[in-house]
Structure formats: structure tokens, C-alpha cells
Length: 352
Image (cartoon, rainbow, N blue to C red; front, side, top):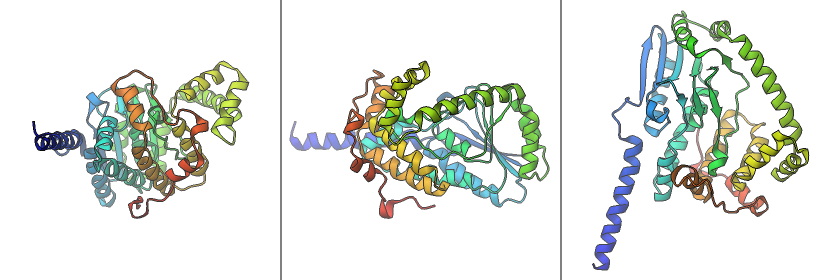
């Protein structure tokens, strides 16, 4: 086999690989992965990938964004409801495998998906009409973005709400809306949705009043007490000037809770832990728009680095649960490296 044939074969394999990546993200018929319907005066969005726990991809983002814009201007649409198909999850996050393959191949998906996802999140966060997310079941990553930024979130006893990014070497988004969650029972979701679409020209206070009538009082009391205790523990243990100080606080405390957190954090990417720590510090003083610009810069930094790909390999591909982080220790992560991740991308910065 001549060098030229080897080169041609390599180029063909590379081209096919890129086609598979793009096809994985954009291959379905328009609208099949996310459904839109008008029920009464309500616009209803259904994430329609139940076998993938409704994981969010670029196709879905590119359908949801213009539809939200259209309903926002439509005088006959009074509110928007978003939900997930199936009975297991609202949205289990983004399509990590596709992003990983695209990043390795240098495909523009790693820029396009994050850019358009954050623009969509900003649209949800600034939406003028009532926006209600029914997050029954697993809600992680991209699913958090589709729900937490809206005005109303309805959780159930089945809701699993999480941002597990540091475990795969990615930073963890930090902007949380000040409004809380309404808690109802899964069996009430159908009747709640019916009552929502039956509202006539509802204001935000009308929607809030209806949701409050479904509030599961015992569940709310349990969550209030549990979250209160958890916040007290977290404030005491996690109030520190660095990740290293947090680890030291946890080790000194010695409680079962603290030891469990120490064990969990020790498995995470040191770089991601330091990025997340700084995010939390800076994000607390920022608007949603400023946070999303920061998030986009960090997403691109993670795509340029090692730990995201290594985390995906260890957790999702080889499943050996033994990622080889670079650097492997907190002390090995320089302040210069962290600073570079937060630096402006110039013309490539997110524009909102």
C-alpha cells in the first residue's frame, strides 16, 4: 500500500467519522425529537427522546428557540409549558458522547451547541410570559438549563435534580434563579397541566396561585427541614477561601457527611473543582447574562483541555471509573491555568 493510499484512506475515515458525529446530532426528521402543540391558550413543548431520557441535542435547541420567540409574540399564547416524554425523566442533560467525538475531531459542534444552548437559556430566563417546567423524573445538565432559568418549576417525589459535571472533568454551571420549586405528586401532573391550559389570560400571580394549590405540604415541609439542615452543614464546611481549605475543613470535621464529601471530591477533576469554586464566587455577583458569557468561555476551555475527554472515557465509554486527571492534584493546578479559562474569547465570545 502506497503512502498516498494510506493518506486517502485516513482522510476518508476522518470524513466518515465527522459525518457520524453530525448525523448523531442532526439526523432525525424536523420536530420528531421535540414536539410543539397549542392546547387552549398554552404552548406546550414536549422533549421527545424517552429512550435517551430526553437528552438535549442541537436539533432540539434549534427547534425550541424559534418556537419560544414565536409564542412570545403571539397574542393567543398566554403561557408556555415544557415537559419530557416517558415516565423516567424530564431531560438527562446534553448529548455528551456526541460533544466528545466532535471535540476530538475539531468539529464546530463544540462551539455551536454550547453557544445556542446558552442563548436559549437566556431566552427562557428573560421570557415575559409564564414559563412552567414540569420536571418529573431525572433532570440533569441541559435539563437544568431548560427549567431552572424559567419562572416556575414543578418537581415531584420522582425528581432527581443534579449537575454532575465535575465527575467528567467539566465545570459545573452556577447560576441559580432565586425562585424555588413547587412540589406536587407525580399522579397530579396530568391534572395540573390541564388546569394550567384552562387558565384564561393568566398573569404570573395567577399561575403561582394555581401551582400553590397543588403544593404537597408534607413534601414541602420535609424538603424545607432537609434543605435547611443541609445548607447549615454546607455553610459551616464549605465556607473557605479555596478548594484546598474546603478539603481541610471536611477532613477536620470527621462526620460521616464530611467524610463522604471528601471521598466524592477526591474523585473529581482537580481542574474542574477549582474552576467551579471560582465560578461560584464570581457568579454570585453576576446577572444571568454575565454568567452565561462566563459559562461559554469555560465550556470552550474544557473542550481544549484533557479532563473532559478523560472523564467521559472513564465514566461513559470504558466505564473503569478511573480517570487520569491532568494535573492529578489540586496543588498541580496553577492560578495562571485557571485565569486563562476565564479569559475573553474576543470575537468568539457569547453575544446575548
